[in-house]
Length: 179
Image 1: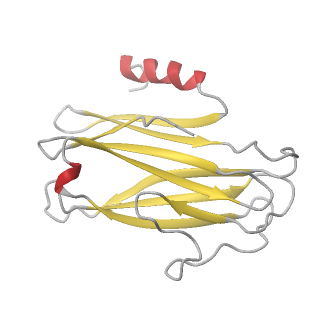
Image 2 (image 1 turned 30 degrees about the horizontal axis):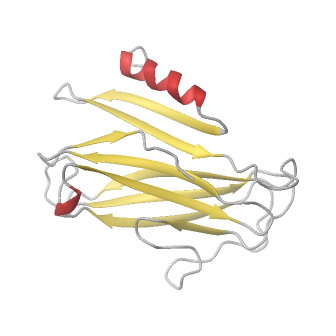
């Protein structure tokens, strides 16, 4: 489905957003509706020595418990998000914290385990959070920002938007990355 016109337009737009990385997947379901799965991750280059200290962040919608069995995202469904911070540099990082703006959860908060300290090159720290869709989410886009920070780098972010239709169906959309 990569030849779909929407995918081509989004690919062109995403090419213009730097220093972001993205991946996309366009799928058709049994009803002929398309779901465009887009992950946008910001590579953190704010460190004074970005060639040796770097932290990459990725956020993915990994599940929908679909409590009502409707096979779409609707009020009361539990969405599971996974935020992964990767030490993508060549030096160890200290004080790494991964957080989620939608739930307020973060690593080391007493519920979720803290990241390894120090975090070795290529090592990851993962935060998994659950969000229950509210009636007030219907007809809106749920903007969810996963962040990671360390003592050696600035904050990196990964943004995921999930459009919840008024008819309680859902469609993923590209969320704006804002400072």
